[in-house]
Structures are given as structure tokens and as C-alpha cells.
Length: 96
Image (cartoon, rainbow, N blue to C red; front, side, top):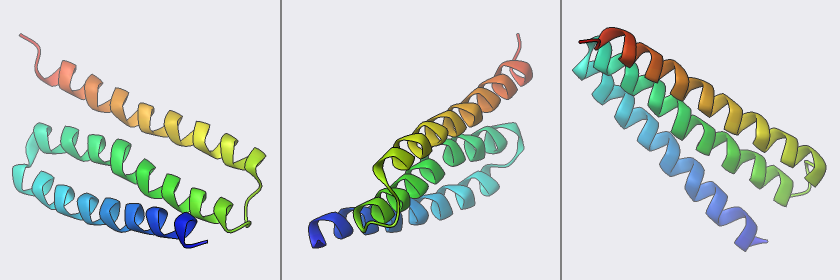
């Protein structure tokens, strides 16, 4: 049981720490670059945090595997949407 719990708990802890640190860095950077950076952070680390949490719940038997796979697809899509938004802002703001 510990083999199922420990990796996901560690992933959740490190991803939340990374989100906090990188959001702080993005606020210090500010402007368009900071906004793009925040969207990338959300796209990556929030999805990792939620993924680890859902995988933990699945490993503990709270979520059935068929729902787990649907949730993972939604997380990948959500992260990708934030990547596209960040890329769109970058292309719009940094035109030559």
C-alpha cells in the first residue's frame, strides 16, 4: 500500500511547492512574460498535482480505473489549453 501512496504524495508536495515558487517568480517578473510564465506553470504543475491526487485516490480504491482514465484525458486537455493560451499571448505580444 505504501508503494501506491508515497510516490503520489511526494509528487503532490513537490508540485505544490514548485507552483508556489514559480508563481512568486512570475509575479516578480511581471508583465507579459510573467503572465505567460504563470499560464505555463498552471498547465504543467497544476495538472501534475491533480494527476497525482487522482492516482492516489484510484490506488486507495476511491475511484474506479475507468473514471481514472477519463480524468487523465481531461487533465491533459486542460494543461494543453493553458499552453495554447500562453503561446497565443506570446505570439500576439512579441510580433516583429
